[in-house]
Length: 283
Image (cartoon, rainbow, N blue to C red; front, side, top):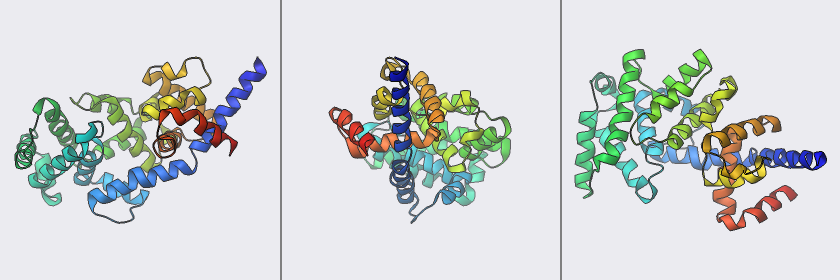
């Protein structure tokens, strides 16, 4: 029994290492850099370039609207992201963004969101979208009152560097109506990866940079050698994955990237998962 358990743990570590390798690099290229390149109309962005993007308050909020805020909205996500970005562009320019961050709320931004919706002949649906659009902007305004910069990513990074914690930032972001834990964790994961500060985060808080999607949950039966691992609550599974990634000697973020890439690009259909994992482990 002990030998079988050891073999299972070794197979889990092997799979985690495989997923955290070149597939993680391809995820970064295809699912992080390229979409933000299109959003910002830039070419061949690097991770260093993204640090600059996220440190700028205007570019940071624009990227959050365009890449993260509506990513869980199914078929509407692209149009909603475009509307939010257009609304921000109409509200202010990068040059006068500091002035807008000094405003008490995001009512002007929401008015422009409604205007763009009207032009596109779609309902603004404030019960779903007002919290996201105004709430994220008002978070930037809140941060600006503290640091005179207003970058949401910069605020996250500063919190990590000062305290080794990320839970307060996670809780503040999910407090925004319409921004769920998966969006918050995805944003925090990417900020942490871009700035290379994963190892500085307290181990207890690393669950907040491990978003659980359908593929990471499906792979849990292979990567977490414990009973009913694919049935665990998201936060428990996130903790287990950070543990087993650490035991395998790899970044839990890179594992997260690679597992999602493997599912979306290589498996595609859940019924092919067993065969795909077996093929991957055979090399």
